[in-house]
Length: 306
Image (tube, rainbow, N blue to C red; front, side, top):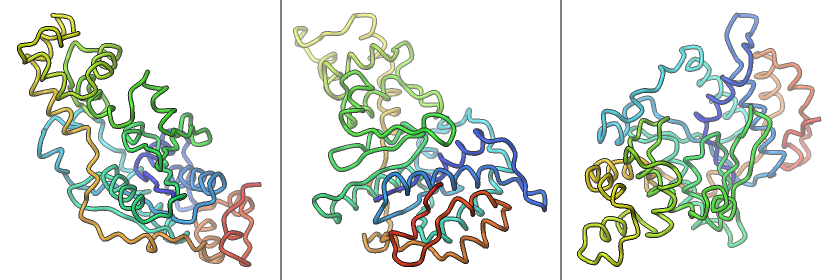
């Protein structure tokens, strides 16, 4: 099963590619880059199931919790926003179902789809989350991996559980939530505990496993359980509220109220004429040449880059 983090890929494509315009003067560079990523993903993994998640254009439960959440992000360019409906047309042409829900981010929908998918897929089934955002690494487990774009729209790294542990010096995927509670996340304007850096945050979570265990140790009466410098303890105690809030903001919600059945995600290929007409409309003539259209079977109807 492939689950696409659409907004992350759209932003990646928009900023990675030079301006591309149709004859009518509409910018379509994000559309072009998104399609390249889509082709690469299909070619690399030959999915049986596919879904795409989008942010809903309204405040989420995180914005309600904290007015500072993502408050420092630059306003999304209007010519990027205008390409989102076009990318939804692409997904529809490729018969890939789209999920979005008011009050939630794409990450939450991805977490919910992955959680439901784990229960409904066969024992050997695998789920791959496609994104340009490392936030999704907290969802990685024995059944779920993350395919993260590393440069532009052509290179990506596949993270299984062992790869996440290696990247974060021994932290497991589920510990990344508590790690971010301490370290914060500048891109999302999540404060964390100011004064605690990456190395210290990793060291603390490795020693105590969870944020709750950290506070049990430093707020308890047993000094033998404390393995943290006095200066860091003062930071943790004075900013406990920020730490707990940061953990809340960082954790992906995996129980979004959406209607989900695994068969709804069964990928049955695409309609040649529909896709060809859409790519022609965008003036993506080079992409048309790179697709091997063959209507003999679902598998053969997967795009093959030449």
